[in-house]
Image (cartoon, rainbow, N blue to C red; front, top):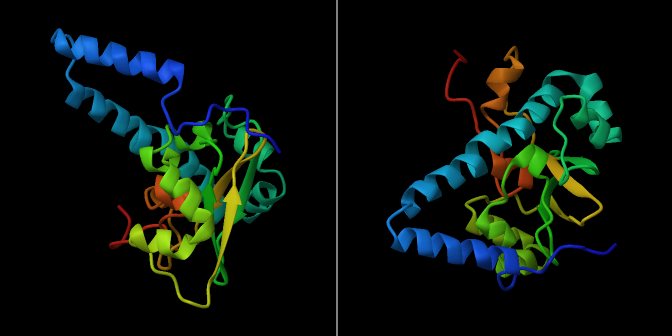
Length: 205
């Protein structure tokens, strides 16, 4: 499968124009780079990934939906109105006791914006794109995730034609939790595969 995106080892023309405009506006005192960083972080880690977190939470609570998500992720995700140009063709991969899934795009930075928001900077960086395939266990350890030696790590290479969503394992002690409560345990990184779902800290509110 081909990747019909610009490689981002260097800034593409559009990104270069954005960078130049940001520099000019900053020099003129019209924008605050720190404020922009906060806005970008909000969309990267808070607003965007909430869609994917709701998909995961629904799969945890609804076996029929989980089976649909496994069989036809594109349709199952679209049923929740999470659609968009970067998420037309989706596949959900489920973590198990035996296998942990990790997503990368080795040739560019294909990413399911409709469910995960903006891609993190590290996802687009050449070191992650190359090392995730060569040494996935080592990469995960750098993210602070050390998996048992016997657990298999499967790496999925996203393309322009197909994007992946990792469904992390449901944390223990969450029986009876609502989908909204469960979604609060699902981070963007867990849906890429560089983290696990957060463990509950106590009884849900």
